[in-house]
Length: 126
Image (cartoon, rainbow, N blue to C red; front, side, top):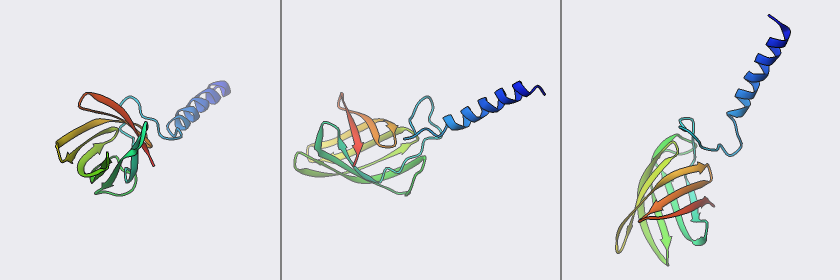
């Protein structure tokens, strides 16, 4: 084998391997290898007082799990339940005025883009 071809092939292989371990594990195009530990408090990026706490049934970094938890919104605490699979997440909050559905995607291990009742917002871990 030509030494230049071997180096080129080896360089391409190294780049492919290094490219799979990006910091923060960004999501994009399929995400079958996306894992996350959702167990934490999360807050709306524009309102630190609007928080969610998720407690998964499976702990640690996993590709999918169901979870329960609570939302603290406008001084009221409401129970929630939902699930995620890879980058897709959905849950329902049982507020006093009725159930509110949320759905969206993880953009990385610390950020979710969600929609609810036609509004979009971002949740951040911590």
